[in-house]
Length: 305
Figure 1 (cartoon, rainbow, N blue to C red):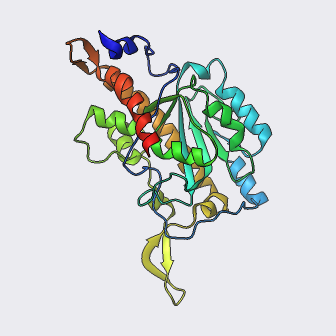
Figure 2: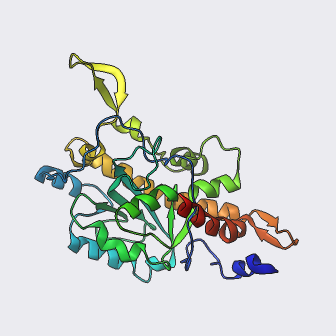
Figure 3: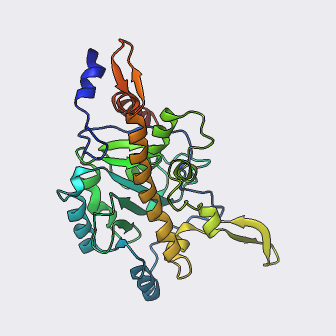
């Protein structure tokens, strides 16, 4: 049956299983969860106020990691027997790169990262994991986890996240799916492949995602100091560490990981139910095609970038 068909025999029977040494998929489309902001980037490590810390603790169903001790607790949950039976969805938010006009290769830094792998996985204070990477060394606590090829991870626009994590010295492995390209394989006529549109299209029963621009845009100040008509995004670190925005910011970023996980499982079921044939007439599903061909091919494209 050829090498491709032999590969199919080694695939997991359901999307939630760990993927073994799987590979990534490139994308030339902008990261759906990142919007353009015209304000200067901020690269200092802010001093989070006590009030911001209290506001963060009040967020429901979110486990916040801002110390190494909390990072190790989260890692125990991520690597528990229960969590290792399914893929983990991840999303990053960044400063210093505008994905609508710039490549993240060698540019930009991760200011926070979010994970979700099901309501039944509790990281300590909830099923949504949020990592504050403005605190020195926190994300690097997860380096071995990210670089473990046996732990399946799913993303929306994996190429962007792969490169910004490389900027942090983390070479992510264990790629299990990219919802942007899973959707494209399923239907090439969809209006948009950003996370906001795809989640509304495939998950109509779920509260829709609101864009960063909708949630956080503010009027740009005119030369006279008065608010103008043009809306711009404040620096993202300001949103993350401000008393006014920190709760909505964490809700926004963790929502992306949760939607990615839900969308990936939905798309897996749809792809798995769609029959096709290979060039020798062997019957398979579109998920088989995605797993056997698109995932390994994508890693090569990312390396070319």
